[in-house]
Image (cartoon, rainbow, N blue to C red; front, side, top):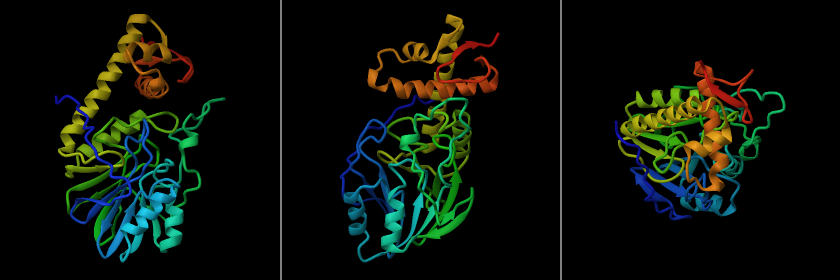
Length: 304
């Protein structure tokens, strides 16, 4: 099994449209951070007619950069992969300025209902105002920017996540589902680890081998990388189960300390959500028990 190796070599060239494949340009938002790397990638697909994929957050400088990069061309479609605030909010204003239709994922929704007094820690990152002109179904093929696209449902990072294939070109716009620079955050109730792994299996069965992700640089030999990515998730799950088997029972913070030794304290919140996602899956499979239902503050033990 190939060891998971991330590629951190990426020059964002903020404000500049960079050609990354024939007829495809990448424009990176200047919104670097722990979950966005050097910024969110917007893709401009086409030449005379252009499709804008993931126009980004409400960022005036980035919106103007999109308009400059497409000057003299006609924006005919705005594609949206999912409704995190660094990907979708600019769609409405770009549509108003260009007259293009917004095509893409469904409006934002959690992967499951909230439990009791549970609070969704990622609510603040969700674009609740997004409404597409046309909601795309799994497997739906359409033409935009003069290219044939196929929408592929890939829930996990969010419940409404879509990736977009260019099947004639062997390219996949993988958004936040698969990225070369890092694993994707999967945090309940916004996301689901079981759904993420199922989506990963679906993607590995496809033929596209060059991925253009929502953050960071291009991913070549995508199937090999995804196999290593899945193995990494399974190893992390095994490590969590090992902690429970050794300790009898543990809380999420205790598991984080055991599994992520030496982790930067500022990243412990994200690690806790990732552990919680894995624990939910382990409860679903019957390997772990947690009272009536899994909770972030719950106490977990390995099933006897």
